Image (cartoon, rainbow, N blue to C red; front, side):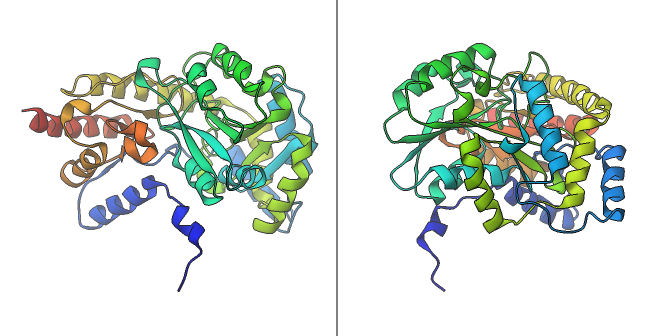
Length: 389
């Protein structure tokens, strides 16, 4: 079988590879602490589940519009308008089966061979994978620990060229937990206004903040019609398996996104969309309780990691990941992650899986219980002592 050349350019998410290895070890009787997967370990709130059940019984079992049901598009438009201070209409909203289609459709619609896509590095690996797949050149925008993993506008200015078609931003960020403030976006908008390029703003962790307020670059003067906002339900409402996300697009781009949706997924499951309506319009106490629990876990894991010889960890301001510096342990990030899984029974990810600037770090998801986090810290600490002895 001869595959198309572009398949060689398509990457993957190492979290799922590590999960598979961890499951194999568990099948052999090993006790594994799972800190590799980026999904909340909470149940979907009951009122959301009930809304989906009611929708199924009411006949929401058929095809719907490719851009989404009017009920959910209206709810999303109202929610984004309220939370970002923007005037968003239904005709700018596309509902999708998860957040990844919004990334893929945006890149497919805007980028081709010869174009450049500026991606944060380290960052969610699918950005780079999809840009490579369409033949664009990925230009890394470094996120450095000394800047608390925030973008440097001056570095961005130096990376922009006449070939730049898309700049990808992510705040709060995966894998670092970094958070961009309003002043960061103001500085970036000042740089971007002089260039003919679009922005994909991945705001999937917008509700998972432990201080400060979420801000979107779309709110900056001159940026609204150049920005695609990506958000969804997976992280905020513990709905990873439901596959429900959305994008807010400039109106001129919506017909092209509609065609891509028709050609790829047809539509998003109707009952799932009605669950999304309930999520946005119903009680938010479960979200608030989840964020409070994540904050307690964050504080525990940051303090625990900083007590381990050869490890240092900054306190993230958002999402549910820590990105500790493990350069003092003398192993590459992948080698250390492999040994932690195989010898210590802790499943996590090497930082290089998120880009070259992630080397020397680990990504640890604290979407697990406090007792399991404590167990993992003990095991990480024990291996670290062996390595620095």
